[in-house]
Amino acid sequence: MNPLDNQDLWSQIFGFANYGELLVLVRNSIIAGAVLGVVGGLIGPFIMMRDLAFAVHGVSELSFAGASAALLFGVNVLAGSMVGSMLAALLIGVFGARARERNSIIAVLMPFGLGLGILFLALNKGRSANKFGLLTGQIVSVDNPQLAMLTAISIVVILGLLIMWRPLTFASIDADVAQARGVPVTTLAVVFMVLLGLATAVSIQVVGALLVLSLLVTPAAAAMRVTSSPVLTPLLSVVFAVTSIVGGILLALGGGLPISPYVTTISFLIYVVCRIIGARRAKTGAIGRLGVAAGRVSNR
Amino acid sequence: MANNIAPPVLSLRSASLAYGTRRLWHDLDLDVRPGEFLAVLGPNGTGKTSLLKTILGQERLSEGTITFLGQPVGRGNRRIGYIPQQKLFEQGTPLRARDLIAFGVNGHRWGLPVSSQTVREHVDRVLAAVGATDYAAAPVATLSGGEQQRIRVGQAIAGNPRLLLCDEPLLSLDLHHQRGVSELIDAQRQALGTAVVFVTHDVNPVLSFVDRVLYLAGGRFRIGTPDEVLRSEVLSEMYDTPVEVIRSRGRIVVLGTPEEPGVHDHLDTGIGRSHP
Image (cartoon, rainbow over all chains, first blue to last red; front, top):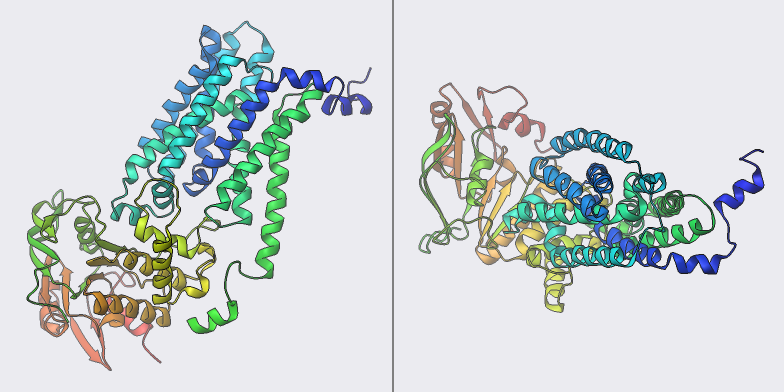
């Protein structure tokens, strides 16, 4: 029997038998996904502005190490994941003020976290599906207490971002001038890293450590291709993130595959479409300029 | 231009700045009055930018005191406008020109970046004042270097500062934009009596506005009008080597400063950018 028979392959990727009953089973995951989509969509533009995309990856690997350690020792996985990501976020925040230092710290932390995580998984004699899920995402794992904890942490992140929004934007795009105007740039940077650590830890529970970027970075990167409005950018980014993850869960439901390929594919396709739209607009002329020609003339 | 009766906006007393054993300047006494335009000149590494950082409270004097509006300086101050060296905004920065100017008014406030009607109208006036109304809604990264620098001037003056600190704001701008941006800074000073401390390696674009010069070189400094300081014998003494200052068609060219060629020096930019 050929496991890659066309018909089989297709139904393994997309299957919709007993869909209604399955939907009830993953209700919690869909809610969790939507909440994480909001978190990812809101924090994403800041990750981009602060040039922290690579840092997200570093944080997520240490978060993975924490989660797999928690799994091995039988403690709360989300808590373990949070310890790992907080540690990474603070290390990167404190020692990586400059981009170059930051990148080298992340590059040092990342393989160490991954290796540590794999060690804990290898020592673990438990069910392998659960373990694999930490890396590539899982949908049936969210029980009620977990959903409550995940939502609570997400609310902390969202509230934190809403409170810091304006000074954080200022500090992210122009730290020198923001500091000159009395914005507490250093404090904001550390607090932001803490929020990023929290967001990463909760995201890993659903999309897995390897693919957190598709939730925290890709939607914002896509939004920034099509708009420069400070209001529209986070809104679009949230819409893209929620679409990716909820859409990914719904599609993954029928097939027997992990959810991450679905989430990452949707998220990637949105990005590609946004890039094309952005490139077309750039070709047809500068965006948002009143009377481009007149403006140019008056400036010469 | 400068108001000599009003109390100084900025005061330094016996101020010294040193990193370890390397002393940048010492025993600096300086008063900057409302409406005064002070150009800070000198080669690289003499502590011009560090002077601005001490005024902003980001670096500490090793000795002496520094006060702004009679108060010791703190970490950042909203009565100070700061125009940094030109640094282009990243492609994709999710901000428009007007958002950047609004930061000059309320960028320090917590919460969402929603501006009140009053702030929006104020931003409109600032946009008009810096001649940026045409590209008010354009993403900042799509603007040319000169346009971005105009927006930065707008951001710095939007908060009605008492003091403008400018760190090489004309660097990498073409002559036309150099003139435009320095005229904007001068206009702010004329209209509102804002004092200006202007760090530059080339005094020529702002020469007609400058009241006094602070020249830093070789661990020494001189303060005075351009005519008093920018003279062959003064600079020769500071540099400890014969230096020649040439005045030609309203421009000043300094020849013979003992520096690696191309690093700073008035000659490079003076001749390279001379008017046609």
